[in-house]
Image (tube, rainbow, N blue to C red; front, side):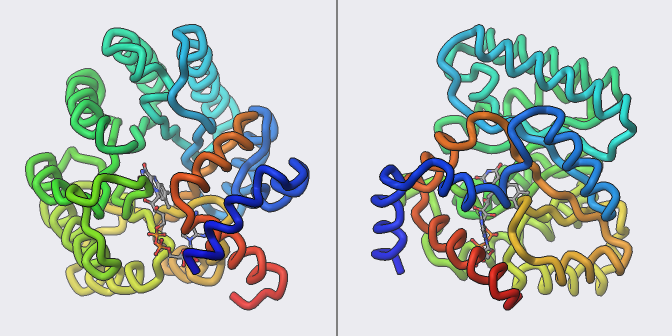
Length: 304
Ligand SMILES: Cc1cc2nc3c(=O)[nH]c(=O)nc-3n(C[C@H](O)[C@H](O)[C@H](O)COP(=O)(O)OP(=O)(O)OC[C@H]3O[C@@H](n4cnc5c(N)ncnc54)[C@H](O)[C@@H]3O)c2cc1C
């Protein structure tokens, strides 16, 4: 499988862009703000909440970082104006984390103020390990000004249980995911089942401490396992939500969760950076190529 995934990645640069777009399109909610906002409305009509993300990361100039920040601020205003059920999820390197602490802090402060003005929520995605501690630190600083802000904890990192233990309380809002980056093997759990086990441990720790948890996974074993525990332990439905990436075909499971009265949020990436972003992600994590091809076949033949 690894061989096939790597082969797909080698081929991608030689494929016509329109073909890559065709394959990537189920995962991306358009190029323009207007396209994205229409998709948010469609998802809301189907009962989903949304987390909006402008594709991109690691900007190289202050101007780009500022443009992205202002674009996010205008999206908060549009969400309010159109009465959409959506929040925003950002990558700190997209608003200038590589350019210096002052720059990212200034942009983040503006975003937090916009979230506050619109009575909305801001999530800081978690990027790779060089950014982990600083992301947590910036989250803590911003939390002092506005508590509708949250972060992400990755189940594959050895450090995550300590992070969750020290951060969790009734005001903590955390998305828990497995983690997508290729990291130094010394820092991460390698075994698939160990990551699953740690994921469950993290979710339980946060929920037991009264935190709000975004259970972000497409792994149905994890969803079923955690949901049974939630029911058994009478965890209130307003203490958690399920989160999935736009386009991953798991309609039946999501309908089942929503019919049971649970919140399901779709993470909705969009923007003109879709090509570079998709290719970079595929190169970083060849497993993604296999997922995309598998899901393409599943949706063509409607197996799932
Ligand atoms: C809402 C959300 C937000 C996220 N935010 C972050 C973040 O801030 N930082 C971070 O490091 N990671 C983030 N991730 C990615 C996450 O860490 C995992 O890499 C990703 O979700 C795959 O893990 P899984 O739990 O779905 O389990 P897996 O075992 O990897 O996948 C289970 C099944 O789901 C399907 N699947 C999974 N991912 C995809 C995909 N991308 N495309 C198509 N099919 C797929 C496949 O069929 C696969 O067999 C996020 C994921 C979600 C759902």
